[in-house]
Length: 382
Image 1 (tube, rainbow, N blue to C red):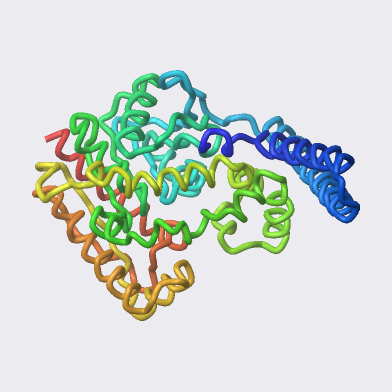
Image 2: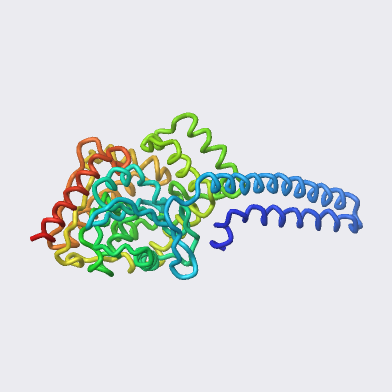
């Protein structure tokens, strides 16, 4: 099911299916012995046929929009086979210590382009699209963090990127970064965790299984599968949506929007979140797991009341008590992240920073990454 509904053409198949059902209902109504039942079935068949025609038009519009957008914006990097499907990687810049960026949620690599374009001037910088995002193929299901770790390893190896790397991860991207560092410690020079998720804070929040989180809902999937998302994002861009302002180049904004208008991103996010609950032991990392690997765990210092208000916007169906306990656990998780290494450090973002500080305060991220690169370089030379 995940594979099917992640495809751009899934709306077309659904429209044809609805049309076929409508046709069968309409034809079968002719054989009814009761006149009123014949009329009702005939009306139902007509409604289904009209609905199918609307879905068909919208799905064709979506396919045309995707084809046009992909022609206008071919993959800026390489599509690399990682075992029967391809992942997209963009590696630019020169330096002995490459930086690999892992955005939160299930966002495409281009979401961190505003960070990449600066750091690539100082060292090698790598963006990649996780399976089901950006230009990458959907990949196999079920998704799980251990699979994403293996995919990233195969992608870097096949691309000739040897490392060791500094991994920079935000929010849910932290699961991939921490698991990669634990699985392939020889490939990781340092870890920068930007308010990254921790097993306790995620697994205990079982109500997230209701999928009432941003980016996951039937309405969002339907909007992407049937082309309505293109109208939504066009309006957002025209009105100058605040979250797009971080991307200065119009072409980058369009590429980010292209990724957000395809059903595979919503499906990929839903599958990745489901994996958190279905395979919790992929996530568990006890203190000292990473040995002496340098780890910076950054936490926003916003007052609890302010952070609660932010959470309320994303999880309006939760009670105040649940939100408070979840926030306490999320804050404590950053202390746990720092304890993953004997050399882990807990850093606080400046006043005013919240969970999305990599977008709202990118200079904070630059400072963290540069500090990590300087630390790793000094140890390598010494």
